[in-house]
Length: 607
Image (cartoon, rainbow, N blue to C red):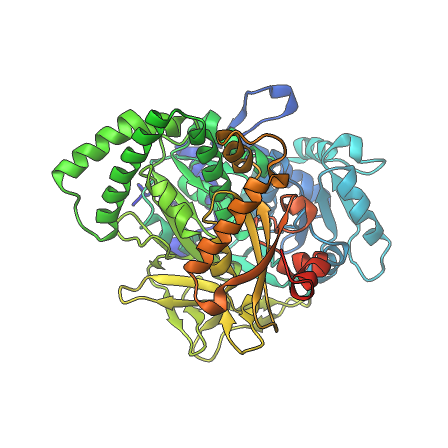
């Protein structure tokens, strides 16, 4: 359990602005927010908690002068930059409702959110975003009246963030600022998160100050972190995970946020910062593991053997802890020695030697990736939750974990499994329903207060939850068999050469797959074997992929086995549309984009 800092009022009356006021008063000189800009080189610009509150106050005055009022939604499409983070807090202090829109949202999704939210103002990053939003200003069905552009060179003739800030400096009045945030209550809206809308228009999930604080308190009882710990913030703020991890929990814990503008820069940030905690969605942990494996492959055989031996000691140590048993004294001594002399020097190259808390969520974590990190003494505490549950609902913890599971429910929350395997949840942090455009709420709970999550899973005898897949993504073969694509894909990705996998077979008698070579591991694997040229074109690599598929099939039942596959040369990503901003597969996009290839695997008879 983390040291709980001073709580400025009764927990059922807490708001985010009250916590920020506490931080400025109690921890004003501690670092709160850091970021890098082109002018900083490799350095970081940092604001303390006192400075953060002052910036939020000035911006609040600027937004108020711009016509933003209590209860109004304000839309934002920006990356993880200080203007975004500070505007979020400023709008909250006004009693307005900040709403982040994914930068990868389609035009139709942007228009739907703008129309549904009733927002009169949108704050966007630069020229690219301005061009996507400007047509909405002329759309009579959209209430949007103005765009505020952060980057001056992209603003055209319109207002800029800098001009709003300047107005705020002139208009700031301390009494008005204090009165505004004190007028907010725990049950007032803190934000609205629009779901990704992969099966239709995005749905609006309202979150209150109370639900966020309750979740933070529950997490704090099971998460063991140093006081004022640093957090590398890289997921979009449109995602509930980063809203909690990158904004709300740091304010609650008075911790230190490092903004990372791009997901691709996360590894470099970790190498620089050597964090004590790290959250990664499964794809990030997979990529980091691939980087480490590629580096290890270049080491002399004697050094690799020493690392593998130390890794076995670490995995044995983790296994005792997983069973809830105290490791024997001899093993404890051997583990500490292996960690200090062998494993930590390797981890330090990735900036991970100081880690005391590591976590993942968003999708089922491949067990081979979890066990790989366990070989370095790093237990990735997998968690699970939804936007509708204010993020984390179940989690593993150092005192109780099962590798491959997503843990147990947080205190006061309940989970049960429906007859068809769907996970149902109930508790104080579960939302009541989706927000309609007219401000009313469409009830989403049954008469007993249970919410059907759409995820499929099981509870074991010790109360740990195990995810299978999304209900809507389950494959039903022509023989009527149900198959979890994630289970098969994770089995395929256990081979280091396979970085990404997509399994297809709905309505067919067997499964096929699209496989993508791991961009980092493939060259290292080839070089270690003296193979020159592009690995994707080499027969030795093709043969190894065939063996990898055969090995995966050996671990799967007959219905789950892959009969044919195609090896692709280009890695999938959010920028090319195949992955969501949280790096999950966009199955419909991949299926549509590669429809001819997938059809060919059924009609042409080969990989």
